[in-house]
Image (cartoon, rainbow, N blue to C red):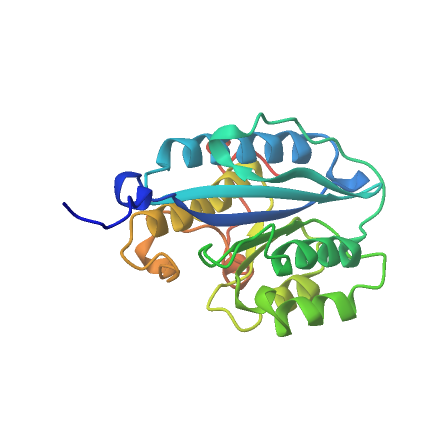
Length: 240
């Protein structure tokens, strides 16, 4: 008879590792109307896809920080399948610096984002310029600690977005600065993010972010904006 003690770990399925996705969403007053409506639709679609993608090894966790009248943790970090989406509303200014500080505190806290988690994806979406002290929080986010190692993506909505600030956010990554001036382009960007994350859940190396060329959908970028024609089809959703 063996004297080896019973080891329950040999008889239980390993717990899925979280792959965190943190959205930093501008909900300032200029985002009202069609912009906030289309943003709600795009995030809802993303969450639905993430819920359908979860497997036994990787679980997509999502947190949403909004910045407008105030900076709010609209959705604490949780499994996508457990999130009951509440629509965003727009109002106020653009306190990006405070939002970055909240996101960084979340990422650095190992009780929130455990060491066993895969590399987080952080997505910044804005249609204007910050109205608070953003320089130091942004530099700290991209340069120091765990936040500096995140995959960072950014999208400028409309011509008034501060491209310099958004471009700074993605420094050190291979990502381009994406751009949306209509509903279709906004949806395309969120589909791109969704596919990038879901590809990682099926990969043997989930910490590795897929090349943009490996993703079927290619959203509009600031770099390519100058080449756009002035006309748009009805399918494009119209300009904001």
